Image (cartoon, rainbow, N blue to C red):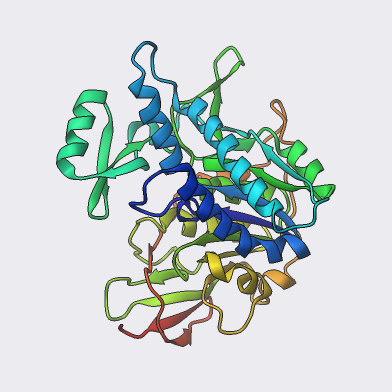
Length: 367
């Protein structure tokens, strides 16, 4: 089975944790142990977040005043290499010596007309208290926004339209290589009017890029791993309940709150709607059980059909050529459709299940 895994930022650096290389390596080591069972039994493609890392690189770049700061697309490329190195090394320490790895610098096309450029929303870098964030915003021309109880820098997050290196990635996966690509949502690029390709000052959401990647690779399963056990409806109320299984159309009629889980839910719905595969949101440590469909395993699944989970899904169709001048198969355009989302849960609890046809949920008991 072919699986695309999107690692949340917590897999690399926990909230509030000092952004040292050793902390990141230790967190990647934990993530690698969770992914080893998948790598041993399936074709595995890994993508990952880079918000803290690209923010740190931006701060380091700003600190040297002799030259202008490096743009975000260049810093994103740097972060892909750094994180790919960590992942390759730590996975390699747990897998057979002859297992091949490749980290691909991945350029992804975005539209210059994407409204995200007018409304920055993607948090990057460290967390600050409000006073410090406002000072930095004034000094450096940042846009800032609340992030939980803290504040962070936010940048534009345009939707991904096409992955230029998809044919290379497909070739490597077919040869049994574990590929790490589209890190941090890929390197955002766009075409100038003269047809030349240039980088863009933005950060693509890694889950939306992961959905496009999984679709383009005809993946059986798209697995988004984070620090929570699934997506919740009515989070923050006594009626909160975890989504167990949902048809892509099930949540669009519901007024769901946006938040950190929003892009994951949108990505899950899009993958399930445009393929015959399964999209799952769940906790990093549950990765093998989420793919195996073990009874009682937490996690939220989106499937187009009424049947089985990831293990029983058939490959997705479509894909397109993916070259710089190749045609767009429409996946990027479909990814641009706005979808409602839900918030994440922050802890586990006993549950009771309920089903209403297209949507099954588990009601969490208060803790």
